[in-house]
Image (cartoon, rainbow, N blue to C red; front, side, top):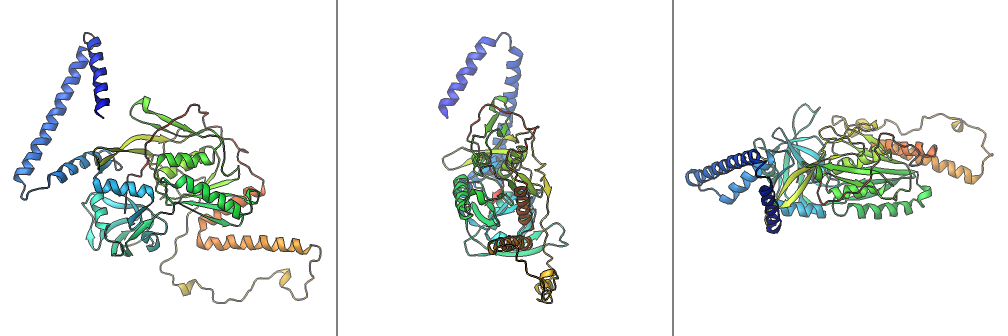
Length: 476
């Protein structure tokens, strides 16, 4: 760091010697600005000394300085902040895929803790926490007036201990409590399942393992389905995926694109702008794709969705995404602490920023919410008897002897698959809708590249970088 600082100063001094006579007013203006900054720093020092000497109790000086730094950063935007030694270690652990807590990604809105998304198969998701929920109390104690880090600290505790959080949910008349047991959160970054002849790829986060796991799980699922020729298409499920590492979002996007821009970032200085392009090779081999998103899909999830949507590589289904279109870079400042600073905005291939806007699906499909007032008995049918009527149900109906036994078996298998998808609607309506879309595209023999998007700009050049697209929200 010292080496770079010295090289920079050398360049500044050399430039000043050449331009002194023609840039005098500019130098005077810069000197005046520097003087003002030093006055403000002196003001900070005076206040710090006054607190040290006169506060009712002797303060922790290290905590005072860290709080001042964090206050400066959080005043910029909700995603910038100071990472103390513990927070920095937690962040590094999370990107590796295992940590302790409830499994909730949270941010802060108007001083209230807001759930960005629950993480799959965690105490939070099992208890029914939903994206957009507000957490107002922890064990009966209000979180109002606390910083996000302080609120998250209230939710932390030993693995195995119980915690009760009070939830305020839209369309719910009054707050309600959810009790959870803290657990070690082991992230399963990619899970696959086969629905009919569709491969469902559930990606829950973007950490160091995401791309490699996606490639491995996709290949296994294709093999299980009987080969790529037997697959009608792929569902990329990014619902409640709060984001993660930028390089992983780029790699996952590239996995399904043969060419074209994936994403670009624009920082404060034009020369810091970067662009990433896809390389040849489509992991899905041109098969139709559907991307599922909802209000818990944020950040890196939106990068992937935006790239596939702009190139018309996938149909986007679900509900509008979270709308985080900024990139944070984690910069170590000591051996054990760092700052998380918003350094750029990102743009989808068509040049749109989704900051605070989110990505609108091509087809809006809301997930039906269960009626909490309805009992299990009320949802049960009153009779198990079959009251359907068809030709086959009539006594003495003629048999169909014009088809072979093999053809009959195939018809029965296809009917069973349709019934399975219909049953899936009760479990996951959005996923069932996505599978139905893939069936329809397969029926018309759709292949990636059949439709080109005219408003996607042609891009040349390559980008690189080590920025991290962390949600900037805390994970508890």
